[in-house]
Image 1 (tube, rainbow, N blue to C red):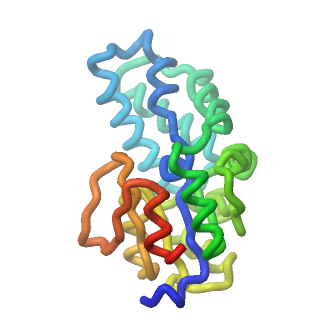
Image 2 (image 1 turned 180 degrees about the vertical axis):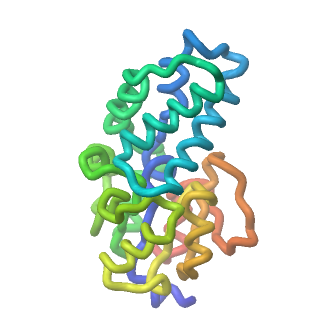
Length: 222
């Protein structure tokens, strides 16, 4: 697909652009119940349960996170405290971008309109977007789509909102599982994997790999 056909560059937000610090916050909150040496395994399970919750019917993101933490605590035979889940939810709007993001986005915005497609609630995400340092044409959420990525419904909502098809989009994410597998299945024209260590890649899904958002400029001719 020629770059001339691309009308929008869409991004996952949390993890890809915003430094998603859920592991650090969870580690601090549960330090009295989970030993240091087993905390990495607990966080892996918490990650898995968040993904599993995203695959079901849409619920507000605070409910998704509460339920995922509760299920993780049950697996580990630990007491679940509602206030811990709420503390994570409350912390999210304070998180800023990875260091490479503002300059990389600003350069990309000179070439193409930027769009966010995020597994977020509407009342949560704008505080994070405001910290990214670049203009966005649209900020689209799971709440609007009534579906979380990786469900195809979330991406279809983006196409409908933008008035375009998958052939007109370049999608950028640090997650193969949440974003780029679905982008491949929908035949989104260009897929970009930001290698932030959030999970393994797989070149079979046909993406360009970059180490940070600064690498995006070369892909779009900015």
